[in-house]
Image (cartoon, rainbow, N blue to C red):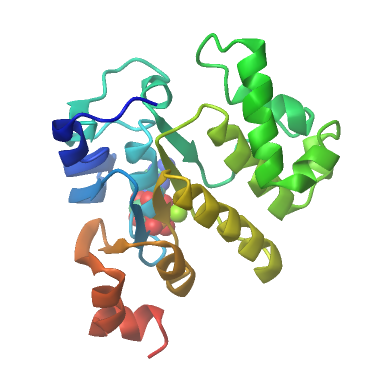
Length: 246
Ligand SMILES: Nc1ncnc2c1ncn2[C@@H]1O[C@H](COP(=O)(O)OP(=O)(O)O)[C@@H](O)[C@H]1O
Ligand SMILES: [Mg+2]
């Protein structure tokens, strides 16, 4: 990849600016400011109903803000479907949205669907995903519904990676997974991060999120109530009492 020009390096890869999102009369996001810089792993923690999934969907370009803007590399997203993916924003959604009757390989290949990706490139990307998650190589020809929840989460992450995102958004990747599988998924995320991928991790499990992230936000009732480095968050009384059992 070409070196980013200085001004490109200075502006966030992904930025929510005053984002408001409503479901009818319910305001799920009430003016959220958040950004992810190149090479950063940023987490968003918060209780049930805080607006985390809504934020993940806005950040991934699936929902359009009612007010404010979502900027990718300083430019707002248009209404074109799949634009976010084409502009380097990958999402791993809650519920995963896999085609469970299809094979693992097909699900992964579908991650390239938005563009005309040459077959050889698809094969290369598939190889990288299978290196990251060796179990997917073993199960490539298997129907996805036969995989465990953790393995399906790996398929979902792998599928997002097939589009070669610059930033990966994950909505509660640990949800419903055993500690062992969660560890494997998070080890893979740490490896991706070390390889330069930027990450926006939405996660209720704060200790887990804090292991991966450089920085974070606490979202509550649709607003950011605390933000800072992991050190700052760990020292914050609200965060400590509600999320770290301190
Ligand atoms: N499809 C929907 N229709 C109406 N209200 C919704 C919908 N999805 C979420 N909400 C509401 O929006 C708020 C934020 O939800 P959500 O983003 O799912 O929070 P979280 O992921 O933090 O649990 C909650 O009050 C929730 O009830
Ligand atoms: Mg949620």
